[in-house]
Length: 291
Image (cartoon, rainbow, N blue to C red; front, side, top):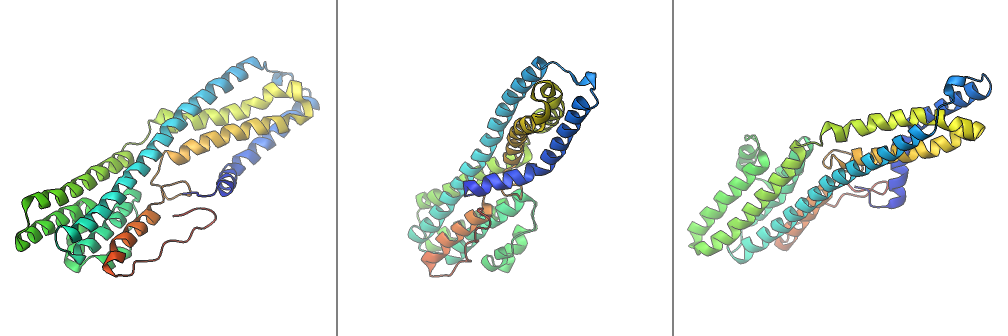
């Protein structure tokens, strides 16, 4: 996730630079054909393009709002994961009498969830936090993150029976696991339910079409400075379109995705440091962004 605005603008500008160069070249071709070779077919009325631009701006605004809502909901659910993991570590110690192996297993949970959401290989950190039996069980299941919650629930039950702990206390700890399962379900829903194709592909196609047709309506008025005026408007629409496409996939490996690794390291630190153990170091921000 980008954490410095100036880096965010530069990253976004680099992403749209290739189509911008192509569109600027096309603008120059239009000006040359119109001014030197007097191609009358290029004298297109400006009103249809003005209406098209207004409609496109509204469409992009609606799509970008929907994309940001997905991104923000994902961040909110990750916040719930963070809070519940911390609560689990605290209540295992204060209500169940302490169980370092459960705190370490919970520290592995966000790493497993991150790998599942981003469709990446499991993080090597997970092996250092889980014992071999738990690791084998979790990754033998189709949903490793859910399997770990199941395993933690079993471990809590055994601990309650072994230490003769009151059932109400067991219910309090188990509710945390249920809240984690609810947050995980919300994150999986976002991952498995992409935006409709009308929101994901159509704005990109219409934006490129608009930028191609724009100089045909501007060349009569702007003349030789058409590439300047057309490119400025084109780059604004390109940036709006690119912003929405970046936000609509909050778990994809990109500079604009949620900082899931940083969140996972934060949870690991908050769970292991009270036990006197040393967590893995926090990732270093690069180019104004955190992974």
